Length: 169
Picture (cartoon, rainbow, N blue to C red):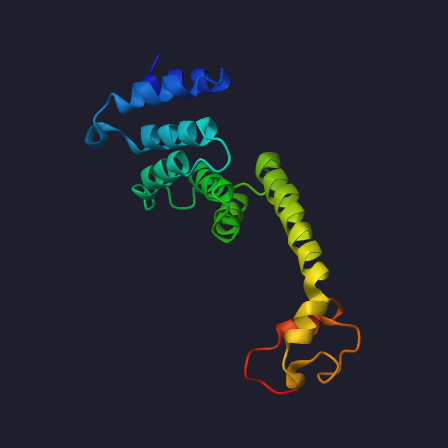
């Protein structure tokens, strides 16, 4: 059995530290891109949300092989996963979109993309709604929603935010 095949078994058994120990024993300049990708996967799976050190290690390993894995589902998913759990949703979104382009029907990516981004968006929207009144009071008169033709408030006037800066209505 090859080391890569052993890694697959260890992943199935959640033995992420075994993968890390085995692959890190090989000098970095002698590892294949596939082994580095498996090592990044193990770092991602071993890390707890907010454990920046392991996620950063995963990203550094994967970045070294960016051209080699261009358009690859796993590479993009692993990059997105690491950025997502480092609370860098914007960057993660890009990689998850690329992963979905490579595998449009992948359930894992779709679930992570839809569920978690929807939850975070709903949370951010709820936070915005809580402070909307304060924001309106802080706006200069000339950018008040009512002056711009929207009597419903900021949250109901999505079209205000679609307009390029510096343009007049």
